Image (cartoon, rainbow, N blue to C red; front, top):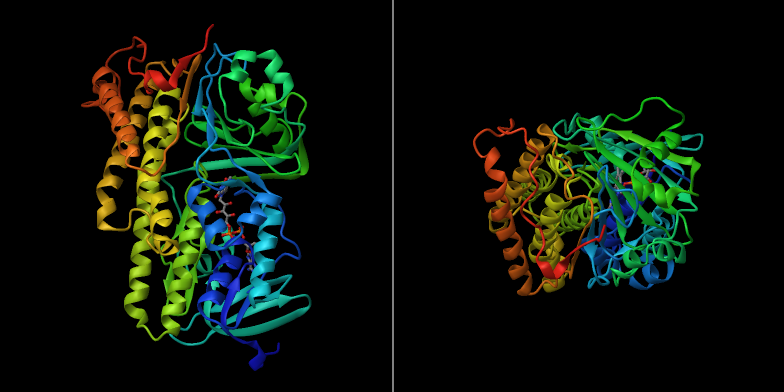
Length: 528
Ligand SMILES: Cc1cc2nc3c(=O)[nH]c(=O)nc-3n(C[C@H](O)[C@H](O)[C@H](O)COP(=O)(O)OP(=O)(O)OC[C@H]3O[C@@H](n4cnc5c(N)ncnc54)[C@H](O)[C@@H]3O)c2cc1C
């Protein structure tokens, strides 16, 4: 084992993927001359999940990291989110109820091949001045509050000890510091699991084949469907369809283990994934000639977890090393945008002589509050109702509206410093947290009752809600107001059944849902 002064750094980053390389980049900009070492386990970054950006992460990559030109040249411009539903009467893609935009999106976002993208962010961090050691793995960390941290790492046959004033843990799901220090917790309220792969030969959403077969379906939307993140949804599960530059498609299923029995037998995980998807008529259409890539099939149980500590005087956790919530709506890289911005800010504050006691306490408070509130407001029990076209349409219009009004608008108005304020962490955002949590809980309760009385999926055939999109302007509040009014009508027409007795149903007659989730201007019904 060897150590010398060359092994003393200002910051050592564990993990050289997006979180690690982005934090290093921000630190190098804020602290010229700072000595940063990035330790990365792999010799070459491989494809990983987390391929769809949304508006905040796209802002971070484009405008903060300065990658807009690279993103436009080497990845795909994304066209929002699109959802496809089914019930037993849906036989073709043209009959499946649809939710999405009628037109192209208004703000930038991208579909990334993370193997190429993360390598590029890492390459730029090194050009900016970071040192990189790879393939090398951090095996031990000794934290010394306010002092010199020490890390043991394996690099080939060597074992080295490195010292640093700060450690940034960007080790992703390995969550090195959280696990080693007993801070890691599984989020047992949210038992999701996922299987995924990259596929070749997936049918073109916008191609001649489907347009010829279903001309009305093809012409009903003016946007490009294929570069959206398409979500093919069932009861308790959803799948993502993310196109990658060059033609491969990332397709994976996420499900709530309380609601879905994943086939434990029936071939390899890839074969079971395909068999599972083929039960959905939309997926069946698209996967007819498709093959998953057998060396690129993945499976993960119990996706949601968090660390009870996010920082101390000498260490800070970023990205997946800090927490992971749920991939629905692609919040993973938004979380990276906030946590890396806050981590760089914390370290820079210490180097400028600020007291760490208050700064670390505030960091831990804000991240814990934001993560918990974000989860409770948007994800807790969402899988109960996400397979219902009408409920999901209302939820999506509200979730997206509040995302634009309260979250996305902030960096566009205030600049990158807005990324230092985490969602739901400030008193002004708490009423929105309570409102979002309330309607999501209510939709879950309404869906639970429908499940009890065998009335799921009634609106999943023949409906299309094509929303015009939000603008971050005052008009958004009006659109949100209309959606809230539709929620009120849903409560009066159906929700009241669950106002007093929240789990059981009083009637066993399956009702026809009475509240349309869209205004007539954005709603159309598909002729039978
Ligand atoms: C099913 C699923 C779908 C998802 N879809 C999306 C999506 O569409 N959009 C989105 O924004 N997010 C999505 N996410 C989340 C997204 O994948 C993550 O938030 C993101 O990839 C995390 O990046 P990271 O840099 O923090 O960690 P990672 O990408 O996991 O990188 C961690 C790095 O650390 C290295 N490392 C680990 N341990 C060590 C060690 N001991 N020493 C040295 N190096 C080490 C690893 O080699 C790796 O390169 C999804 C997640 C899941 C589970």
